Length: 128
Image (cartoon, rainbow, N blue to C red; front, side, top):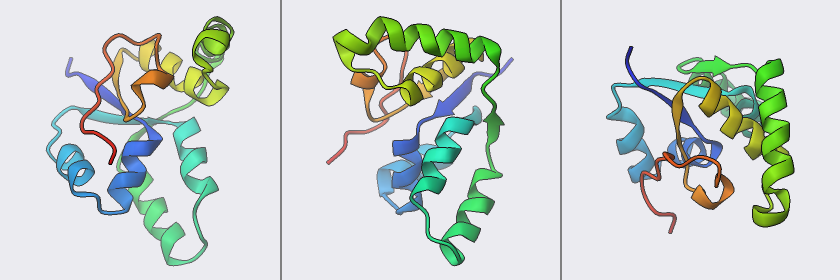
């Protein structure tokens, strides 16, 4: 089975803004690319209706979208509990981490510090 990558919101935002590092990274991948429904919600929270929304509608269809099920919810809740005080991990990031773990996907993010529970997260480039 080919490796899957779960792409975090920050990388997708950079891609949508045309940031060269994000475009190069995502377009060179041969792995299965997944996004969490949490990421979908985060992307739509910042979008304007009209052409921007239509572009985002088309863009998100290019990924496998992973729903939050009971197992992800339980593990995400436990991550939040375990890492809130030490790392200030929010519920959205805890759910994304649980999604990566349960689907055996490597998380691709620019915010490694938000995911202390994942030892194999990929940081494809540095934020400027």
